[in-house]
Image 1 (cartoon, rainbow over the protein chains, first blue to last red):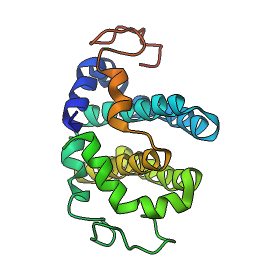
Image 2: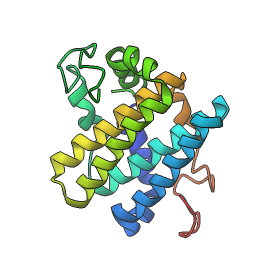
Image 3: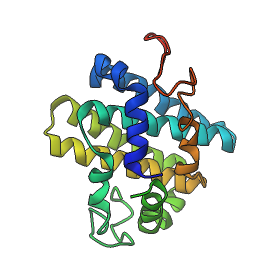
Image 4: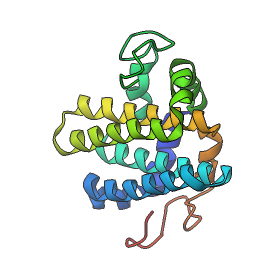
Amino acid sequence: MRIREFQDVIDRMYSAKDRKRGSAGTFLWFMEEVGELAGALANGSHADKEGEFADVFAWLATIANVEGVDLEKAVAKYAEGCPGCGKLVCVCGDEEKP
Amino acid sequence: MRIREFQDVIDRMYSAKDRKRGSAGTFLWFMEEVGELAGALANGSHADKEGEFADVFAWLATIANVEGVDLEKAVAKYAEGCPGCGKLVCVCGDEEKP
């Protein structure tokens, strides 16, 4: 599935509701899912983790929809290499973010 | 770009480093990016938001790589409808999460 296709599925499914909530209100629900992902990473089964990764991705996509951001276009910044060092296999220092 | 393709790009770019960090260490950097996204949503340009959405997605993908979770497979739970109500256009109550 394409990134854009997933964002479109989420748009049809949730945008009417999330546009009413706005980005800030939607972000709160996103954060709850981020917390659930943390819990699954700490102490969940593989299936739990799969479910929580999907949910965080879905909430990220819905906020992007509310903001009119195209995630597939946005990630083009990674297509040519690490935004930090420009390499396809990152060589930024371990102490740096990437 | 397919979800799987993006995850593979991120795998080649960062996995050696992030496997050493482990999920918990990588999650800390993810959270920093989530904070930057919050800042962009509150007070950023469209380009700032695009950049931060991409970074949060990239960090989510790298944690998924460390955990051996296939994001494209994971989001199949949304393909048939909202996981809450089962509908393609969600009809869960506004007070509920989706």
